[in-house]
Image (cartoon, rainbow, N blue to C red; front, side, top):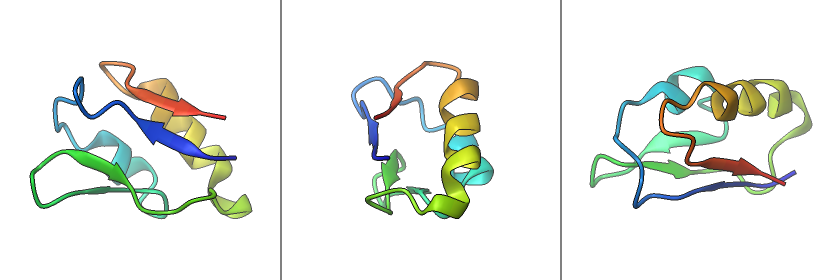
Length: 62
């Protein structure tokens, strides 16, 4: 599994990084970014939760 973030739509709320810090972090510009590619097996459920709970739906997981 791989995660992608549409950073143009990110509102920098930090929910993804809080939900799944193994896969998402806040970049120096304040926006979220993916920090693990591919998603580690043990973090797949949390990454999916982060995607599902993103308030602006900018996270895709393939």
